[in-house]
Image (cartoon, rainbow, N blue to C red):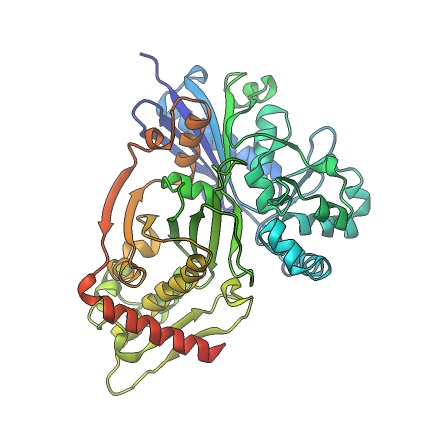
Amino acid sequence: MANRYLLGFDVGSSSVKASLVNADSGKCVASAFYPEKEAPIMAVKAGWAEQDPNSWWEYAKLSLKKIMSDAGATAEDIKAVGISYQMHGLVCVDKNLKALRPSIIWCDSRAVPYGEKAFKDLGADQCLSHLLNSPGNFTAAKLAWVKENEPDLYNKIYKVMLPGDYLAMRLSGVANTTVSGLSEGMFWDFKENQPAKFLLDYYGFDSSLIADIVPTFAVQSEVCAEAAAELGLKAGTPITYRGGDQPNNALSLNVLNPGEIAATAGTSGVVYGVLGEVNYDKQSRVNTFAHVNHTAEQTRLGVLLCINGTGILNAWVHRNITPDISYAEMNDLAAQAPIGSEGVTIIPFGNGAERVLENQEIGCSINGLNFNKHSKAHIVRAAQEGIVFSFCYGMEIMQQMGMDIKKIHAGKANMFLSPLFRNTLAGVSGATIELYDTDGSVGAAKGAGMGAGIYKDNNEAFATLDKLEVIEPDAKNRDAYKNAYEAWKETLNNRL
């Protein structure tokens, strides 16, 4: 029997990764990413961050060529294409579908004043009840910056899109987008269930700039003859799924239902939970977007909590406190200190302003240190506990929005490699943690299988997802974890 492969792309800011998944076995057969060193980010001015969209296309070509060769796959073997991508970026194209300028990507902060002014002028109630967020530094505000500062270029714009929309357009020759994508750019009105006319009118954007809307899981377009010849794919291969990186990470972990949580804990940390009703945080400390399976008939929102000071704190402690031992040995050292680190608390917010703290920048602090009884072990443990407690602090906001958190899904990577980190998170939150072996490009490939109808639903698509470990809450030490968390919160509140 001929092979049936699903192709997934993940357009990140550091690289573009491609994976081939065998549709029948559900297993990834080949993966590659380019460039092998981090892709350049252009910063012409402080706070700016841009990338050339054409570079994403070149990286996609190189990674695709590698996996097709490694798997011995032919163009006919590829049955569907899915795309994951860095969220909140702005790509502007002309009538010939050529990029007019570098993409203003997610970490570019130039649009903050434009979002803040809109929030003030339109009012918090209007923005939060319709957009579920402040316009903030998202795609719509970035387009407002272009309109004011590059008017000649703005007048040439035919369509605006997100990075994933751009790659899909290069593959198909067709410009379209999704509700999930529009929501992350602040272009979607959840009350009216249509593009946010009030915000478009406020900024003076013509509604024709919004690309045609297609379902997240469906035949969105097909690989065109020109792209097929350039990539070695078959013309007519369907493109059947698209999702931003955090919603797609949740999909990759089979997180689609209310109360389910997907978490990552790299340099920064993200907790992404699914909410089954339209709601928002009135203080805008978390962001709310349409999840990949959100429809007009079925409310599925992704509530996103971002903590900037996560793995970067653990790396700082390793570099400055325990430079002569490995991370695994550092974890063993931390375990020598008791839960709560005998009164040492670390506030982990030393990597810039934190949205969960209403954009305050309070820095990192070590509190309660006693020179006569505390050691390196206490500091290392307190750092990991501080990171966990910041996650739980944000998860309390999610619970206030109506989310019942019982299970956390995560990849077994970064901070989740630490038993102490995992046990503390389960102990404080009371949630079971399940660790899996997956990544964004594999999730995008399986999403393509769902959109193409190769899989009847997510349960079939992710039936072969490798569950590596399950961590249950430690009931015996529940009070100790709770007391340590409450002490940490008291310290935080004294800092705010």
